[in-house]
Image (tube, rainbow, N blue to C red; front, side, top):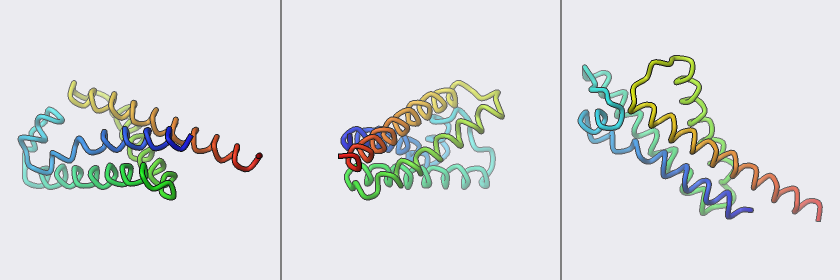
Length: 129
């Protein structure tokens, strides 16, 4: 079951690393999100967002190979994806580029929940046997 959690973390980590390309500038952010930052403040915030996604993705990838960090990786990844999904749902009206992000985050959340379920299931088996 730990392999399922590792696979879930690898997939979620890869999804979280995709936005890291946005740190390279406005052109990359426009391709990712279909919006061009209109001022330096927005550009700074979106590039910093890219860095934070790199950190979350890196944590998920590390946790895939370090079992002691799997629960942390699953939790941080789930908070990241769930918060975006909730914000998108509450706000609505997003473009097709962000619709792809919603789908990707939905997939990441399914993976993370499956990984948590697998870890939880394997923990129960270890204590009952």
